[in-house]
Image (cartoon, rainbow, N blue to C red; front, side, top):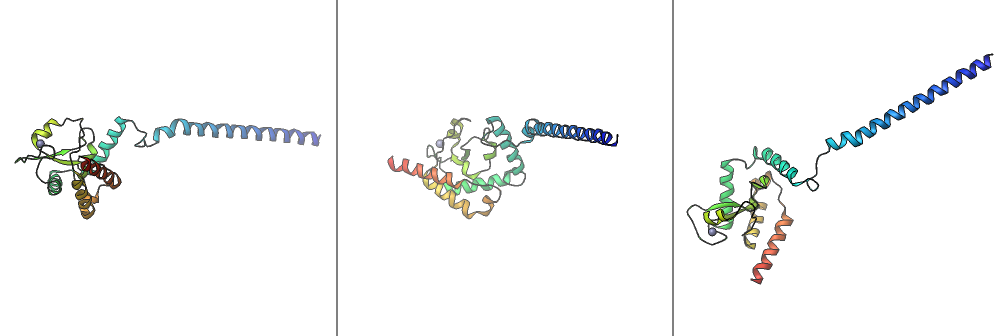
Length: 187
Ligand SMILES: [Zn+2]
């Protein structure tokens, strides 16, 4: 009698243990798949390379807004940038060569499409009002010469203020300088 009761008890005990285990494993896998397939994709930060164009602009706007509060995001600092660009490139139009009393500083990559580059000194060039007006919002022609770019790199490296808030792509600048030099020598 005792032996049967004990057997019955242990059978129930193991059955309950097994059911509890199944229940725990089941809920754990359910939560895990919920996290992997539903929650994680929502909280993942989009990477610049993978993000589509629209997202890139949104990210750029965010970076721009955040940085402009502390860095070159006001008129005073724009004036400073202008002065630096004129010092490096001179006051003649890089496209047609004329000098005008009201020379423009053009954004090589338009700020409407690349707002985060608005206050980047490596995105600026001197143009006369006429040439600047002719350059549309989609055009990205870089009229700088190789010596302008070399002076630019030196200026950035020597100027703590310019380096403070922005990271410059020196590798890319060097590559463009070399390409321009090659082109200038061939011309
Ligand atoms: Zn011009």
